[in-house]
Length: 562
Image (cartoon, rainbow, N blue to C red):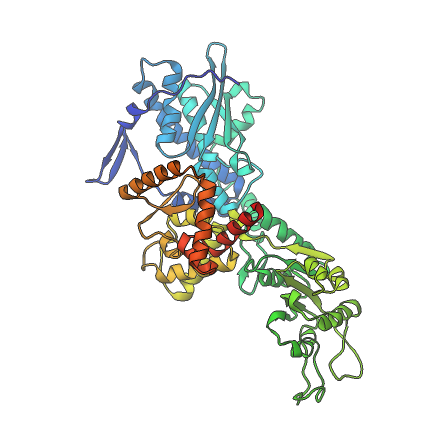
């Protein structure tokens, strides 16, 4: 690939062509009227097209729209840089594309010989708006999604050279690539040029109606697993893999062990498993083993006959019997006492329960879903959990990934929860600010989905009616009193005033004079904060502007190094 291309010329001449006319509400690029449009609006349009027309027709419609835009920009190119080299004149298109906020363009190959009918152009794309909105709405893809941008490149280059030029997107960020890349050639140079050109042919929607109706039906039936609280929301690879395991288990009677950190939504996944199974019309019963008094666990789970123990004035039907024909979820299973574990093992092996005080066992038909956030293997080693029960439960384990492993799901989850709590509290808010979304993507979420849910409900309550939910409203516990900014890594940090910069300079000078490394300074600050807080890690974390989990991690790392 040619790496000797000169840099693109300055775009100052193009920026001079942009005029804002607030008095009459118009924006001009030379003599062409332009519109500043939110990507959220384009995202909504894309979603509507996908739902109504299907992905194939949506791609073609957006490519044709981009083609028309590229043709218009090509009208400027020869007028603006009449005396420039071919490459500099051609660069008007890529530079206008960047100026218009569509994508960052880096030329990599530019070979032209019009007499011999040869054109080869390779361009790298970064920060494609289409990738951002498509991933947000539909998650990772198997095929490239920069349809309008691709149409623009084809339309611009075709109009510039006065002959058909077609581009292919040969790699795309939506498919997991580090950046997008396109390749363009004269139409006749492509072996499949005729097929590529048909993407830009206008076709009748009436002719395609029957096919589109079939596609719409297919799209609408591809629903996420759900329970009575609504669908499980997610599109990340970790989420999709978990759901696939859940679907496979739903078609069987296997005992399922759900593991994962606190707050990941193990009960929601258990309910979805029940809803997808043939037992969906039977009871779903959930038991929090940690919340039951030790002396009542057996009677709660297995039931008790009248007079079986002091105070048993009537026969008690246990949770297993209540769930007969359906699903029983045993949450926080690691907290179950050893005697109850032995009885649970017998139930799983025989399908029979023994009520306390009963003379004969009773048959039950129950699928057991166990859930825990503790390491059961470690609990076995410590003598707190039966090894044979672990073997019996571990037939089909499913790990629910924490939210920090599902970064692609944070935004759709947040929007889903926003709709939920806006309806619940009857309060109108205008979504989230871009800074709030960036803050949510950067936050580590130690409390997982439960923490996200709580923060969003609080944010909606605190936000002004008719306004968007901002970062400070979502994260009031962060030290953001002086305003916030998003650093190059995408994380929230306090905005610095000139005085802050002066203090930073003084601190840097003192650090240089002391000979202390940055790591040594951090370790010293950690120890001092904990000492001044009297060993209270929560107070020390607040003083340092950290969460307790972040402080604990740093302290554990410090202890390992010592």
